Length: 160
Image (cartoon, rainbow, N blue to C red; front, side):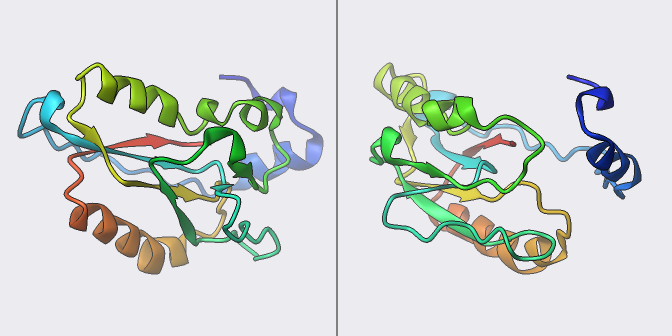
């Protein structure tokens, strides 16, 4: 991990004064069946959308707390990254969305039998949500319910 000196004064000040939240202890649920029998989904905060989907709205104060369903058969090069943060270089994940949404790696794990199956959909959120109240109260429960309804056993969270 880098240090704050990498950022401009404006961003260093923001990061030093931001009211970071801590979850302690981190929740943990052991697997109830072997990985090779599990349904696996990706959840990322890279702000990816499929070509036919509406981009995330970077004008919403505190961040766009909506999410997008990304189908498991998505053509990876067609994913559009719409992350609002200017605090990191987006070039790598724009060139290869698998860096932030490793769906091709998940396909390989399914093909090799390491996982039972990949879920028919995955979820993409906007990162850099500085006012997470709406996310926690409205959006997260809806997203979790979709994964529960899909009988997902494992979620791979890829924060950006």
